[in-house]
Length: 101
Image 1 (cartoon, rainbow, N blue to C red):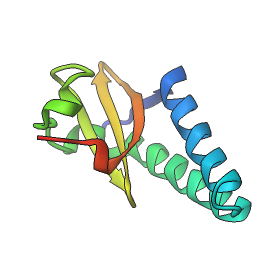
Image 2 (cartoon, helix red, strand yellow; image 1 turned 180 degrees about the vertical axis):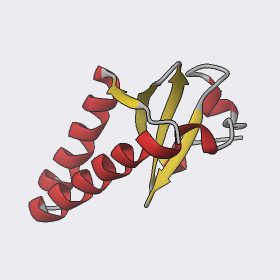
Image 3 (cartoon, rainbow, N blue to C red; image 1 turned 120 degrees about the vertical axis):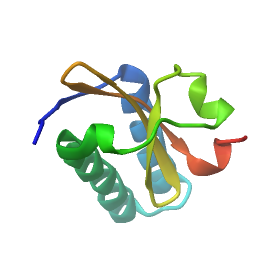
């Protein structure tokens, strides 16, 4: 089985931090924020094993990141990524509701 390395862009890191800050500050749930962010990171880590098994994204709002984008959902967030050679590049982590046809 092919193994991939994972690279998280600064935009995706900012998305994750912003999501955690929102849960901590607006929802007053710092423990939930930490658990949710850790869950996303664990999901990203799992991509080392199956990155290319998910289909290419078909939604226009996902294709703005490129024609070879893939998407993995985690609760109500979408992890948008590409695969280049042996590397999974996490492009964005966005609220799933932002994805339009």
